[in-house]
Amino acid sequence: MEKNTNFRENRQLAWIVFAVVIILAVILSGGGGLRGAREKALRVYRAGVDGSGIGVRTDLGKRVECAYNLASLASSYKVGEEVISEINKAASVLDAGESSMSGFSQANTDLTRAVESLYTILENASLSEKDAKYALSEYKEFTSRALTMSRDSYNNEADTFNAILGRFPASIVAKLTRVNALPLFR
Image (tube, rainbow, N blue to C red; front, top):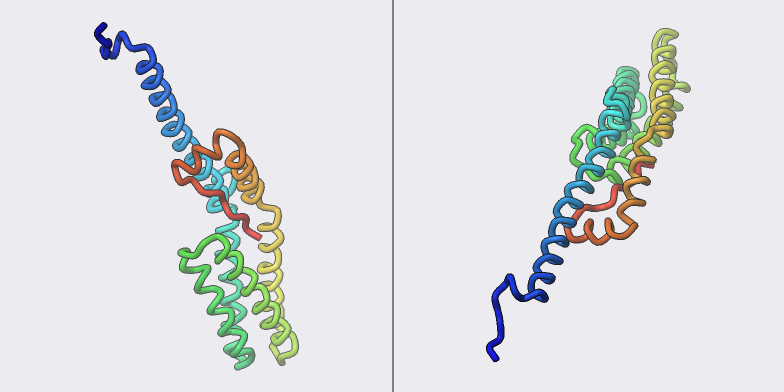
């Protein structure tokens, strides 16, 4: 008897091809879906939930601006030169926008520590009344942006996305399509 190798007549081969096509479709469409969900969470980081521009990235920018303003004020009084250097170092990481999320988070922590030190120095310096009010205003804005960031939706979005990546079949699709989990901003 002659063995039949015609594709249309070989059911086993047809089922294998069908399974491969289904698997490839799931991987390709699932990978695109995961990349889209990841990008959605990153948009929340950059521009806020509704695209209003009120997000972690915007708040970081405002914190850097306040830090620079306080550093400029301290420079004019010739106080806090070492701390100003720390502010400039942390702010440059945040300004560059090329760091990882954990790098931004660490730079934000470093910036907070340096600004708090500088504000203490300014409080003990002989500032004019106008400059003291300005320093307080900038410091309050700096700290209020930290509070806003702590309540931002990005971490919730990242947690939700990461939970999806941890479940089957998304975990397999993510590995095959190299879609990575999102880091949290703390």
